[in-house]
Structure formats: C-alpha cells, structure tokens
Image (cartoon, rainbow, N blue to C red; front, top):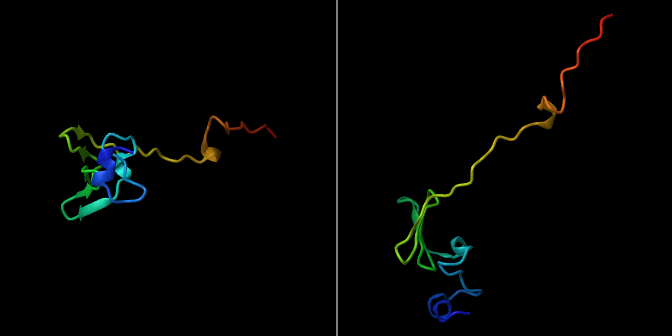
Length: 88
C-alpha cells in the first residue's frame, strides 16, 4: 500500500489511485449532478460525459461505451437465406 493511499483515503479497502486502471471506482466525496461533475476520493473530477480531469492536470477524453444494435439472429439473412418456393 502506498503512503499516498494510506494518508489520503480513509476507505477500507482504499480507493484506487489516479494512476490505477480502475481509478473511476473511487468513492464520490462531492457530487454536483446539476453541474455535471463529481469529485472522487482520489482527486479526480469525473464529468457526466465520462471525461476526467486528473489531479496532475491531465485530461482524459470522454469514453462512453459505443452501443451497437442488438440483432435478432432469426432475422439475419446470412443465417436464414430466403427459400425459393418450389413450383406446384
């Protein structure tokens, strides 16, 4: 455990540091949803659009997940080709 974590984060388990890959999992210490941002325990300002301002001044661009449409496999022409009717 780093000295930074032990002295700045009172939570158990301690919140991730700003350099950890899971940094957004830190607890919220100040929320301002009307303004679109929250301050996390590790000093990160997390914006509603998922952008971040790190304590050292670095900016992380918004990174919302891209939603792809869910397709019904029964409607996929590659899996269900149109059958030609047989003549009577």
